[in-house]
Structure formats: structure tokens, C-alpha cells
Length: 418
Image (cartoon, rainbow, N blue to C red; front, side, top):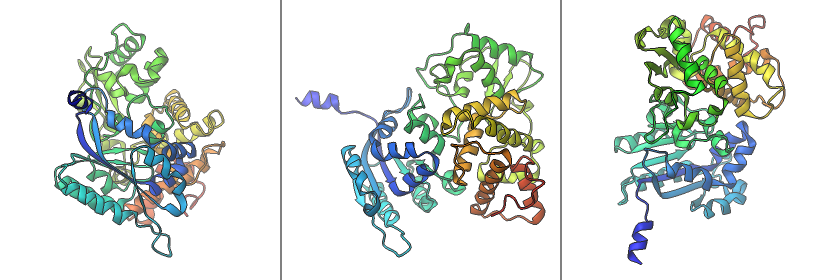
């Protein structure tokens, strides 16, 4: 009996999960109501994905699972969370403005866990609320790993303090069952994708590898990753599932060998190492004027040119008719259309724009004209700059709008304002 109990006990990283239910749920409702429903009614699904990890990565034991919610509004979801092994803490509104007690309860419990005898090694905070920045700082000061799960715009300082961030679009994909890889595969944007141990390598004779190698070797310089990915997927559509078991495009390319190199810089580049190196990549400063470079650095807005943003909105206008409400297929279609139009952008950049449109209140369920999409996206970029305390003069504001809108608002002064 003792032996069987010992064998059933899973080793792994000692972890704690703290979920700001109201923040995550309301954020998901803006992005994808179906995903919000799955988050609220099936927490076991994504917490198990986090606990299991991926090949080559240690599993986790969530010694603490806490969910903080307002019982007046969300009490109907309590049974789902208790059944999934969470301790549910009621956090009713304590002020006339509706501010709940989630923040203080979550912080107090987290600090107790930090100093507790269990010695938690990894802390997960599911909330986009930048009020928790100081808490993340305390975790880091104590040499503990931190992961933020976001369902909304994440303040730059909050993002930078965390070791990993599970972005909104990746979280939505997992909740909708459309992401083949574990949720934690996408949780570290600060590090270049690395091939996971034990993942199968692509066969050298596969059509996609042959196409990629031939394309890169004949190119006059490093090639945008989005364009290379498009060529590979055209040669072998089955790679759309999980890139041959590698999980991500960058990890798949890194396994190919044959003097093919990859860098995630500036949305990703691939090159022939026999003729080029990382020093041949376009310099960021030569691609972006000062104001755009500053915005990109501070807010994480994709490093796209004005022409690329313009093409994203034109492609989105066309593809919304084909994929209304399906963000996964929509992002793929827009990415492929941009590549075909000679303005390659990464799928991550497209997802960032789609996420921003959601924050701006644009429903991705009906076709909208490109200028309207551009105006909404530009408002979102302006809001990101405001939250980051960035200040611009009138000339810089105009330059921001021209760049972010792809020039689609130049004939409509002030169209992006308000």
C-alpha cells in the first residue's frame, strides 16, 4: 500500500495558481465569448495542460489553486472550479464603484504562499491587471519563477517583470481546443523558440523541407519568416497542426539543419548560413522611423511597416467575409493573403492586431471596411501609448496615425481619435 501511494505521487515543480476570475472572464468575453464560457466552466482542461508541461519540460504540481470571484455576479460558476480542485474565495464589491476585494485577497494569499513551508517554485497569476506588478516583483526578488496568463492588454512593466506571459490569443486558442501544443509552449515570448527534447525531427526528404531549403538557398538575403512559413505550408499543409511535432515554426526550422538558420528578431527571419549571418538581418532602425521604433519598443506593437499594416487591414476586410467569428482560421487566412500580396507578416503580428481590434470594441463577426478597421486599431495603439505614459506632440501623433493605420486615414484627419 505504501509503495503504490509513493508511485502515484507525481514529481514536478511545486507551483501555485492564483486566478482573478472577473478580470480574465471579462477580458475573454471581449475576445471570444465561447472561450470565456470554456474558461468559466472547464478550468480543469487548461490547468492540466499547464501541469503536464511539454516534452523536455518538468511537470508541475499545483499545491495551491485559488480562484477569486465576485459571488454576486459569478456564483453560478463556483461548482465548476471547486470540482476542478480550486479553492474559491468570494470577493464581493466593497465600494460604490464596484471595485471588488480580489486584489487584496489574492496578494495576501500569494505572500503567505511565498513565505510558506512548501517553498513554491513557480507562481502563476491569471490576470491582466497591472496592479499585480509589485507582487510579481516580490516573486522575482525571492528567486521564484513567474507566469502571467492574460486575457486583456498587458502593461509593459507588468509583462517585463514576469518570466513568461501566456498571451490572450494563445490562451483563447487553447480554450477553443485549436492549439495542438501545450499552453506553456507559448508562454515565453522573451526567449527564442528552442527545439524541445524528444520532439520528432522533420524528415529531410519531406516536401516542406525541400521547398524551404531550395527557397532559402536561392534567396538574395535573409527571408522574412512569414514568407518561408507560407511556402512550407503550401508544400505540406499537414504542418498546420503542430509543425511536425515541433510546436512552432521557429522550432521546426531549427531542427532542419542543412545550414538553414532562424532568428525570431523582427517577426522572424530565415537564411542560408553558408552565405549570410545574423549580421545581415535588416537593422530595426533602418526599418522604422524614431516614433514608430519607440512605440514598438515600449508597447510591443508588431514591428510592421505602414505598408504592411495597410495590407493587414485590406486582407482582413476581404477575409472577414470568409471566416466571421473564427479567429484561428481568420489569422491564418490574413497572414497568407499578406504574403501573397508581397507584404509578408507573421501570424503572431496578425493575432496582435486582431486582439487590439477586440479591445477597441470591433466585432470580428461581420465584414467591415479596411478604413474602419484601421481607425479602430489606431485607437488601440493610442490607448497602449497612453497607458505606457508616452507623450507626443501634434506632429508625432499624426505620424503615429499614418503609420498604425497604414495610411488609410490620411484623408480623414482625427478619424482615429476618441
